[in-house]
Every structure is written in C-alpha cells, then in structure tokens.
Length: 393
Image 1 (cartoon, rainbow, N blue to C red):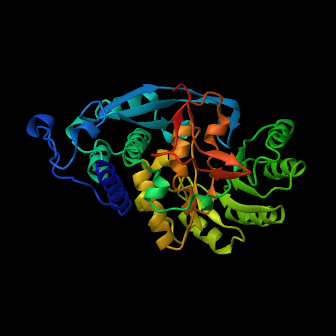
Image 2: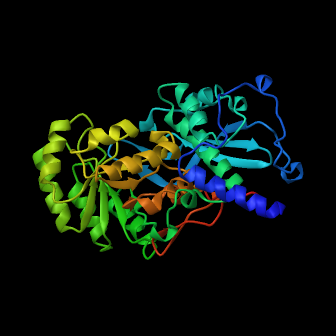
C-alpha cells in the first residue's frame, strides 16, 4: 500500500512539474515564521535523512582545455568556473557556472552573487518558479551564477521525482540530434590534426571563422574530411556584401548553417543578409534571454540557446517554446563546461534542430559522467535529474 502511494505521488509530481505547475507552493516564509509540520498522509519513515531546508554550497573550479581554444577575438587554455550543489533531505542536486572571457563574469562575481542566495527561506524545492524568480531578482546580470543555481535545483527536483527532465518535459530521447564538435582557429597543421582526431566520432563539425583567412580555414578542414560543417563567425564579418558572398561560397563547400555573421548592433545589415542568405543564420551573441527571442524574429533563421547566458533550464525551456511558436529553428550551445552543465542542456536536446554540446569533450578534468556521444549523436542516460554521476563517488 505504501509503495502504491509512493508511486502515485511520484507520477502525479511528474505530471504537475511537466505541465509547469508548482506543487504545494505558497507565500515564501522564513523558517522561523513557518515551523515544519508532518503531513498527515505521508509516512515519516519514508523520508530520507538530511537537512530539512535547502542548503547551497559552492566552490571555484578551473576547467583545463585539452587544446588552446581560439576564436576570432581571443585564445585561452583554461576557463574559470564554479561548482554548486544543493542538499535537501538526503538528495543532492549539482550545478555549474562557466565564465569564458566574453561573458563578462568571473569567479569573484559568481561567488559574490551566490553568497546572497538564501534558499533556506523556501520550504519546498518544487516551487521552481518562485525560487528562480527570487534568484533572478537579486541582480540584473550574473547569468552564469543564476544558471548554476537553476541547474542544481532542477537536478534536485528531478532526483526527488525519480525521473530525468527530458521525461518530465515529455521529450523522446531517441530524437536527440547529432552534436557538432568544434575546431578552433589554429595553424593548418593543428586544425588538420584536431579534425583527424575526431574522425568517425561525429556526424557534423563546427569551424570557427571571422578572420582574414576564412577560406583557407575551410579548405584546410575540407582537405581531410567531407563531413557537413557548421561555422561560427563570432561577429567577425564587417561588410554585409562580403558576408553574403562568403555564405554563397560556404554553401558550395558543404556548410549547413552560419552562426552570428555580423556584430550584434548591425540590425539593418543582419535583416538584409537574412533575406538573401542561402543558408540558415543563427543568432548567438545576439541572443541572451527570453525577451531577445522575439527581437531576433525576422533577423535570423534560428537562435542558439546557452544556459550560462539565459540563467538556466527554466528560461531555456521557455525560449525553446517561444522560438517554435515563431517558427524559428533552435540550437543548443554551451561554454567550456563539465558534463554537469552539458548534460543539463542535453535534457532539452530532443526538442531542437542543432546541438553544439561538446564543452565537456574539450576539457581534461571533468568531474561527472553524463550525456555521451554515440555514433555522433547525443545519448541521454536514464538517470534522474540532469542525468549525471560524480566521478569520485
């Protein structure tokens, strides 16, 4: 009888959270204002041991890149980050913040933000909307720090429900797309070497452009592979006519999409290019959060959603839904991240057109096992929450 009741509550919880409902959420109260009471319909012996209020923990963690990573504006060999966990009644949810230079955030800013977050004032982790609205209200920026809390909270709630988030949202994991693997800007010899290293592992590659030798870079890759290619210009093209000529040339080379060809403030030029481009154009730096989606309609074919820019899974899911309503394509991207944040983003992957979720494959010091790439496709583990296990567990 107890098992039947437990199964019923878990299934009901899945249905409610998947529909975007908060379970048992009321006005936020501090612990001293709302003493704990034992629900009459739950057997106390079924509750796991642990803190009765959510406890947030965090520490800095620098990600080590396997190769120097170069885009049109900078190079780096490491990425600063922070690891987060939320403990509650015997469950632990994991989260992560990653701060590449262009994001404008740092270990210091993330730490300062997380020190302001008081999750103990919330009695119920299932109040996702209330909790994450509160977290978002603490500052106008700090998106990576907010994403870390969001990811950890989703991991916690998914574990309490005993289901991965792709199931809670109703997605079929078999529909997860192939992921690109990124080849950064380098010498021809190194770029060939990187391309050959991933031979047979991926179905599509991504090449960074935005230099005065873009054709040479593509020809270098093409000399060793005929795989479909996506390109990311990172705002590196200045003239719209040259950009259009380049896009036509890229189409002839087997490129399937172009990311952020022009600077984010070139609205008129971007609209002009979008109307004429023979390839789909995706917004990257131009898209940050939910309100940006509607603004990009008519400028780009699709959007690239990254958890570190949009504050996490809660908002990313809303962005996917809005983009689909506007008949736009969707791509999931990432920063240099461990399998924690990459696996979190991958929970949305069955709902998108393109995935660039290779950040965990670019580092040498991952902390988790999670989403994998099998025959070039993202393969989501059947684990609750965001689908990860600590490697040192």
